[in-house]
Length: 336
Image 1 (cartoon, rainbow, N blue to C red):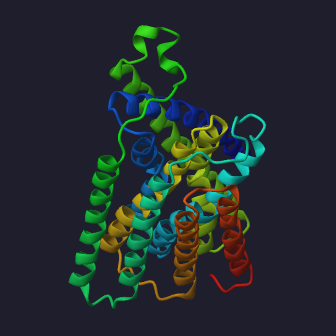
Image 2 (spheres, rainbow, N blue to C red; image 1 turned 60 degrees about the horizontal axis):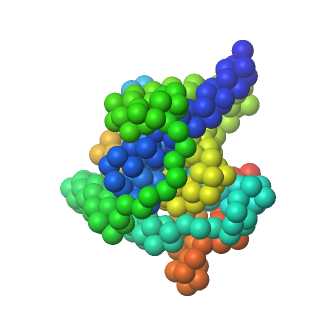
Image 3 (spheres, one colour; image 1 turned 135 degrees about the vertical axis):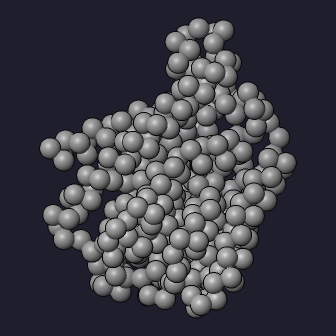
């Protein structure tokens, strides 16, 4: 039964992702936001809901000794997954859809938006990592860092919106308008579709994670490994599906902004929550190495894009190497 629920929830996430990308593009249009802002802010926050709720629920409602471990693992696992595996999947999608795309394997994304996101991500996640090395008795120092992380996200959003002006692009028909041209720009119809898609994303992802947890318990997988590998893979499905959909439609700025924007949100807001709700002590080799892999992968991508002044498929595929390294370290027991 659990395997059937796993399949059904996966299909529902895919349907919800299609509804979401459709509605969020129309919302961006009526708000007169650029593609970069739509992808990095609206889409990123929306699709980050599943992996945002998982650690919060684990930390607030958890009633066992593994709750804090699961919460911290989920917080660290999301940026790791986005900066490595999700980047790889996006690059692979470009290759898969190359015959459908007019620009084939070239990537027509605003690299300024991507580097802007990556720069803030590297700063925030590094600061969160440093905070985890501070002894727990320096409580107020950790609170100050949490405040800085939250502030950095708001500065990031303001700068992104200010630096990126609205650009017109072709939009597919709004699904909930049902072909009625007069309803295409109706903000209430757009919001209804958006809210429904987010509800489907959250509930379906939650059920998917529950099913993954059930399977992992059968296989006797440790709590930290579950939190940092299986849970992020499941909860990051909306970002992956959204980016694949946008890549297939040659909306590369939206596709990449959805990922890098989520990375920024999850390297600032989520660690701030973790700092406030836990001791946030990251002294184990597993937590340190996992965070460092995410930072190094993002840093290499940032410097390569900055140097080339463009984004290529090979740059994105490199993320797969770092994810493979992570898996090897888990299998060999270095990360546990």
